[in-house]
Structures are given as C-alpha cells and as structure tokens.
Image (tube, rainbow, N blue to C red):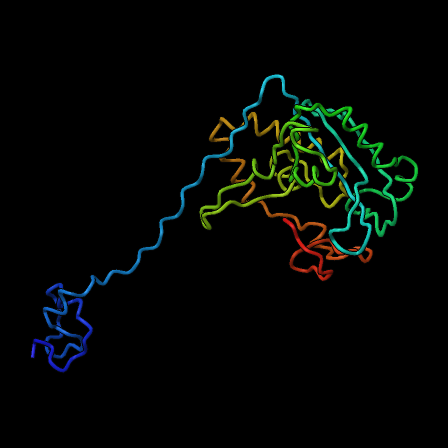
Length: 278
C-alpha cells in the first residue's frame, strides 16, 4: 500500500514534495513518518569562484633608496644546489649601473653555465675577485636603509648572505608584483623575469645568455613601470591579460635538464637527488 509496507527504508524525495508519479510502484518508501524524519536531499553546492584579490600596492617612501640587485652563479658540483656567486650587479632607482662585480669562486668550478650566465673562465680569471672583497665593495655602496628590488630577490640575498635590517632595509619581489589572478583556477599565476620583460617592456630575451647587469636593469624598469601603472586599473588589467595570454618561452632548465653534467634543477626532470627549498 501507500504506506510503503515491504518497500525500501529509503524515503522517496518526490513523495515528500507531494509529486511522486510512481504511486505504489515506487521503489522508495512513502511512509510519512520516515519522510518527515529524513534530512532534505540537497547536494552540496559548488563553492563560488574566489574573487580576485586586489593587486599589490607599492608605496614609495621618501628618502629611501630603491636599488635592483641581481646575482649570477656558476656550478661547483653536478647537483643543482651546488652553486657559487660569480657576478653581482647593483642598479639605481634611475636604472643606472652602480656596481658590476665579477667573483672568482674558491675551489672547483664544474661548469660556468655560459649559455645561461654569460660567464666563462677567461672572464672570471681576468676580472674576478675573491667573494670577501666583492662583499666589502657591495656593502660600501649599499645603503643600510635601501629597499632591494628583484625577481625572487630573497634568493639573491641568500646567495650573498645579506641580512635584512643590517645590510639593507627591505625587499620588493617582482614575482609578487607581476603575478596575475587566474579566475579559472582561483589562484595566482607567477611569471619569470624574461616573460615579464617580454610582455611589459617589449624586451624579449630570445634565449640569449643572462647577465646580472642587464637583468637588474630590467628588474628596475619593471618596478618603475608597475609604480607608474598600479593606480590605473585599465592599464594594469591590460598588462595582466597580456601576461596570461602570451606563450611562455621554455626556460634554459626546461630545455637543458643537465648542462655539462650539472643538473639544472628542473623539478620534473631532476635526477641528482638534491633537495628543493623553494
């Protein structure tokens, strides 16, 4: 009968709403008591896409020097975390070179990684100095309250063993300034220096070797561009759209999982077994 005798103990959701078309042939229970005691049959709704966070704002502080810092390294062993500083560049807020120091690392150099760094034995033998001497010169030219600008600038600071609050005042990471909210994934997409310079400065690297001075100048140009553009929502939106839409050129590490026997630290192709810290 309609009371659901002999039927399954699962209540009929349509009976509960008063519109079951199957009557006594319904395979689910039409027991009013069971229907009343059952929770409503509601599927969890998909979470709404997260709204885009507001872009980062740079507030330039009066009397505080902003300088771009960049480091190039050579490989001292086959593992991707075995690197030594071989070039240091410091660039002013007005995009002019302050320092270009070459460093001759102590001990073994497994590879100069020349297609990536632009460094070679002749260059470092001719112009290289001990790291201690280079750091003395750098600290002489680096104001204690300076804000360091760069792509993943924290890594450069680690290479040089600089201390925030002692050797400099603060940092601005370009990867955070030029990140773009991707609504499809409700997360940020981050870009490298080459891609940002290609899209925003019209300076495509086209696979050329890097150079600490050139990279530091690009970093300061990007920083100054962001400072000029950040209050213009339309222009910032166009810049973000171009960053997302433009195809990213494969990195040296992606094209060369190893170079001269040295692992380039590509997470997908790494075979050296050394840990990743970032």
